Image 1 (cartoon, one colour):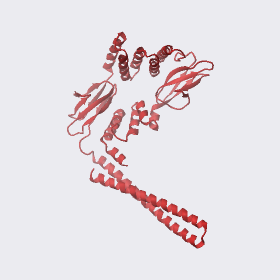
Image 2 (cartoon, rainbow, N blue to C red; image 1 turned 180 degrees about the horizontal axis):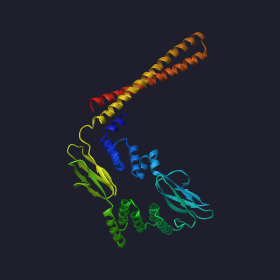
Image 3 (tube, rainbow, N blue to C red; image 1 turned 135 degrees about the vertical axis):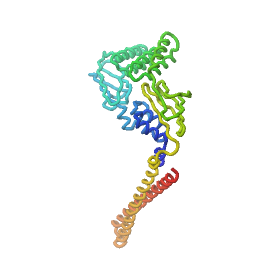
Image 4 (cartoon, rainbow, N blue to C red; image 1 turned 30 degrees about the vertical axis):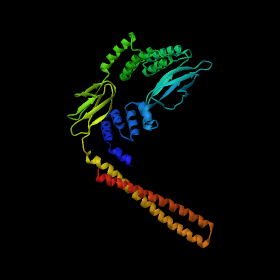
Length: 384
């Protein structure tokens, strides 16, 4: 109960509520990263923002997260035994993103392919033994080349996620940096994934910093970076803003990814945190005023504590009344048992005594909960 009251009074929770009301779940989730005990709600916000890997890591069992971040894959491969991620393919939902298919036709070696699940959708894949997106047996280098050819086939069909996954598999097999370069090019063609493309170019340039391909990658990255930006601003009047340690006047134009924000304004609470910047998105932040929040918000926590106290008293009184009835029942069966000395009456007496002990214990639990809640309520009313 105390944790709930603390969460309700947390400035981070108030900021998150503002951001969610403004239609910015990613910013709301960033605020809740600082609020203890808010992981489930933060996971739901991340899922609503499309960051399914982060949402899955926080709360994979949450039904809201699963509904927002899972889809299904159906494979039409006549005669083949199909597994996905090394388990039999069935109608079970899959997390959004790439998954590894393995197909075995009778009398033939296993073949492999990448497929991507999409949130809330059913992806249907038709495969035959000679499909261009299948990778068969061979040396690591031969399989890496086959993964590359499969990536090009996926790209022609505009399946960017599967193409990028095939190139990642190719790089894992032979370590050729060219696979990383091709992956960056695929991501650059994928709508709304320019931030991932910039990171992919950086990864390639780390693996191969010199040469003609490196020069070409730098040129492409620079061109992409001019348009792959988002903006960040503080809407509170007279606010001073620093981003990544540098002072900013007005609106900051930034590459996608997390950025450290420091904001201060007269009469408002300072804010220091990491803020996610999304390409093509204008992120706006309002600082909270100093002092207590509006009266309606301040009163919420003590009212909750008072309500819990009332419920505890009511529950304790109810079980105390039941215990009194149980005590009378014990005495009644005890009297009859003494008079007639039968096992039957002694058994009834023991049952009544057990009920009395149970109800009396529950009554004291209710009164104890009421006492704790009342103490909390008094504290919150006197020292809000």
